[in-house]
Image 1 (cartoon, rainbow, N blue to C red):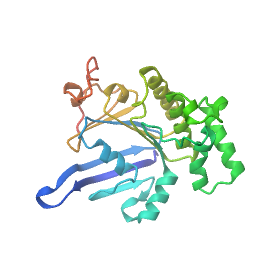
Image 2: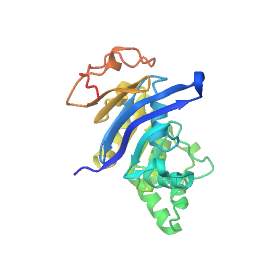
Image 3: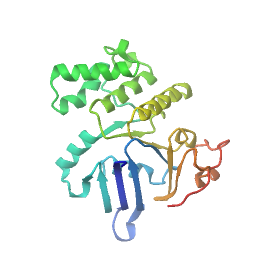
Length: 257
């Protein structure tokens, strides 16, 4: 039986009080199973960033329940939340977030230091992760000595180093040129084929098409949830997302939740 990694049920998120209250997420429910590659796509202001922060345990919902790899998160205090986040989620960000004074190897080692792994073991693990992503010859290079694509590979190695249950990628190709972005997406497809569970947040439907499943969000609500290769349509393909990336996209058939 497939193991659920993300279980969101009736998630609401509001900011402010009284007349100033703004609802960002509205009764969001979804499940992501182990081994899935899911893209969450929507225009600016759709609520996708708030949903990402909720999934990543960087923010808490106003109401609803969220189980991450079996852990009921609303019962956790801040310290427990941080511990679960560090153990179960590997983050991949648009801007890489590498420490400039550290080498590629040392950047990948960082989460392993926080996890209490011994020096010899963590260096071996970090080196192995970098080599598996084609960065073996550059383990001693600092970020300023690496291209954007190479820096993102280091960031991906860092995210994978702790063997997380989930890889959460926020616009991972946003700071890259199209060719390098394609290489990073191909790498993420490979990682998923190797069994890694990936949730990718993007405004770009062409990028979302690389995932096996595409969840479209608008005005804080999930408006479609489809699997690539099974159906062909999404309401976002027929409206302007503000990114100018929808021209020439193939239509999908809408499947409302």
